[in-house]
Length: 319
Ligand code: AFP
Image 1 (cartoon, helix red, strand yellow):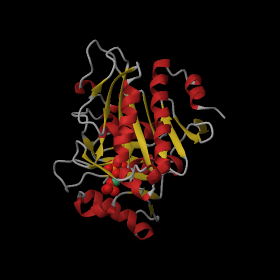
Image 2 (cartoon, helix red, strand yellow):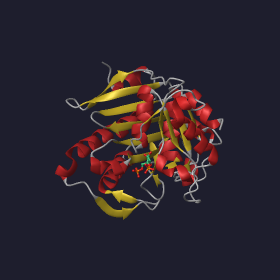
Image 3 (spheres, rainbow, N blue to C red):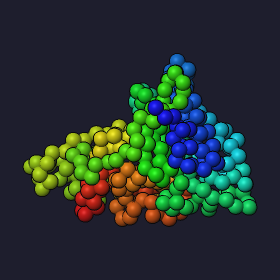
Image 4 (cartoon, rainbow, N blue to C red):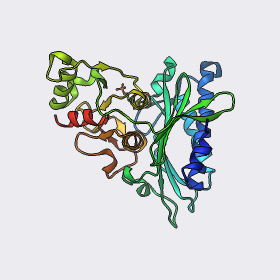
């Protein structure tokens, strides 16, 4: 069974990119170990801070963010980092080649119930003579050179693309290495499974309400087939299920808070997941455009997300 380093070397991934990926992923192994200790390590509960988006940070968000930040800033190939938990970008090495955006612990409200969480990351290649600024990060998602996540579940799994398909790795707890367990993942074009937070239904656009009403109507409605619903409440878990057995995941535009066009963050969640889905033959859109074509306006920008089985995403957009 091939390990991550062997797979990266075999796919001719540039050494500088390998170094950033290796440091990111080995830090995720440390995060996985910290999570395993759970309350035994005295690390659960609120840290008493709020992040830039006004949400309460759990202590493990802070810990994971600091671990990734310290490791990546020390890596010579890193030009700058942007994190969901940092107000501003943090420049690293002016002569570094890579910008990395990450959500250190997606789905952090799942921590206290010992459910799935994950680290999501997205890399861009960029060089320059001056220290990086926020402006440098405002690059369309289609320019990503690598994207992935580490899912902390019953086993820890790495799902990675460097633009040549999607591979899944499982963490061997004995050797602390990721071993290739599924190659060239493909998402089926059709599905009978959807994921959406139904409690927001009254805030959605009429067209989204109609689409979901037809899913729920199943064989009694115009779709003429029954659908099942799943909601992990951590995007990383819902996207993982779709990559493993298909489906559609939606966090739609809603009118709950007019200042937010969606809940999910473009740079830390939507872009990396959109790259993975497209590399696996699926689709990823907002209600108006392909996610990877969005020109970002700010690093903490939020967007609506509709991603998964290609035909089902098209069906949703047709509403
Ligand atoms: P947290 O990391 O703050 O828990 O947010 C997770 C998330 O952004 C995303 O991973 C989930 O899909 C979504 O929020 C869940 O949102 P609901 O709270 O509406 O279920």
